[in-house]
Length: 222
Image 1 (spheres, rainbow, N blue to C red):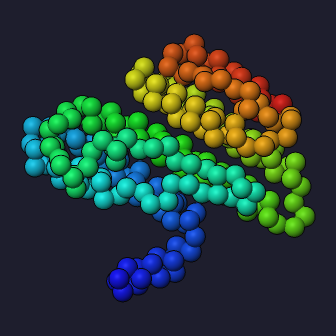
Image 2: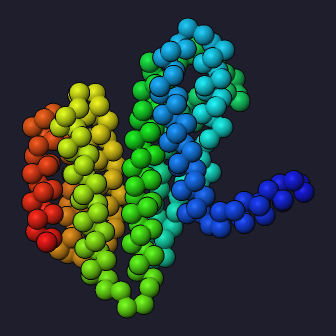
């Protein structure tokens, strides 16, 4: 009990709040997923090495998955399938799920981490500015909208040049970000996200359509 109390004190001192906790966790988790994705196929015939990789990733299960900002808006990390389907601490067979499927699970989780990390930093910038005296709320929403559109544009541009499987992953990240943006109370002129349906980047035509739309949107903001 004393050890747990001391750990709580130390972590509070080190990180200060849930935002710092989550920011650090996501940075570590991103690196861990990338390592797992790069190596799981290489060790697919060795159960002990698979177990090692599974355990290393399982150690980084995030603690903070919801961040509530000053106006009550809550940013939520989508459930990570790896931690729900692969549990080296329980009744566990490292070969129960094949390496190709494990890699795909990790890839899907990584896009959730990427989308959440972008939104975490994007909204932190917005709310930190919003809390300062003399800031124009309309201008801050415009800047938030512009940063968000620029991120979506970069995803669409990458998808345009990517193989279909990679484009599908980018499409998922694209839609995760839009889903989070749709819950933000933008002023009417920036409320486009609340009217969005799911969009796809998994074909060059679809990606180009989004590129054209976003570039037009950004040009109108100048």
